[in-house]
Amino acid sequence: MKIRAAVLHELGAEAPFADSQPLKIETLDLDPPGEGEIRVEIKAAGLCHSDLSVIDGSRPRPVPMALGHEAAGIVVELGPGVRDLAEGDHVVFVFVPSCGHCGPCASGRSALCEPAVVANGAGTLVSGARRLHLNGADVHHHLGVSAFAEQAVVSRRSVVRMPQDLPFETSALFGCAVITGVGAVVNTSKVEPGSTVAVVGLGGVGLNALLGARLAGARRIVAIDLHDDKLAFAKQLGASDTFNAGEPDCALQVREATAGGVDYAFEMAGSVEALALAFAITARGGETVTAGLPHPDKRLSVAPVTLVAEERTLKGSYLGSCVPVRDIPHYVDLYRAGQLPVDRLMSETVTFDTLNAAFDKLASGLTMRMILTP
Ligand code: ZN
Ligand code: ZN
Image (cartoon, rainbow, N blue to C red):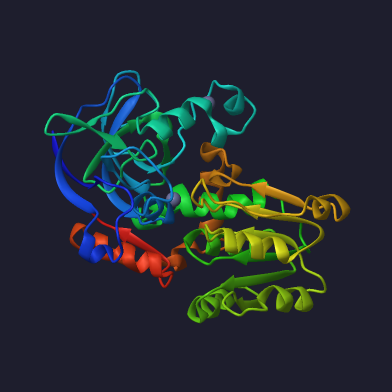
């Protein structure tokens, strides 16, 4: 069948994207779902920094690629062998499918699923297939999903069923921003009640980390960003202290205000500078966690003696160390109970026509979560 989708043909487009138009809205051929796959009508797709990182070349991926990975929709067709979903079910996409059988999956670390990492790197579904074609040539899938599209064919293992009464715009957030941000705090770090926490970078993921820190019972939550309006919003969401990362003595200010630094510092901006700041404001004995994805050539300079003599931990967090089928329903319950008000992080909706310009806005850091309705 024919669908419209946003396709990236080249990495490293020049900003502003409103002029360079890196995403072309193309009419693609979408294959029917194969064994263990489903076809989903996309109702809402979040614009995430990881999409921007493919566009600007800092997260190199094979092209042409149909972008988008944080989305929700309705199941419209089941491939052979799919028995635990029905047409009409609402689902959210997860950007790491879990095969359920490899070593990491078996040990509850599905973010590290081995077939998934190979498929995501190659731009295929976890089966190895590509279900998208342009004029007869294959188009790659973004993280097993490709959700900036009217419809998607994905592995059953790339979705989690969602309640029918949840708005699609809200559901979509749970697939990336919520599990990455909240999961980093409650799964990767297991922040204890009474801890001090800092979040560097207040995009969709960073603000979710802030909500996660509140949920975990952090005594003090320090929010850090380059934009004062983001800092003001972080206060409304429960940050106790805010600092502007643009001030040259920001690290010193935070260390003074927190008597030597925080127990847990989360880097959620995707830059080495932000990670260096997060490391600099972590207390002796504390943990620095990064969920950002700077270009693979980037390096962080750390004195090993600091790790040893201060018993410091430097840790990565992917997919919030979540098991999506276990954690997403749990986070939805917390959302409904008012403890994870993730819908407050949505900013505006965009269309295919305004998608490239929306990525300029995302790059500026001035927005929270924009949602595409294809
Ligand atoms: Zn994402
Ligand atoms: Zn696996």
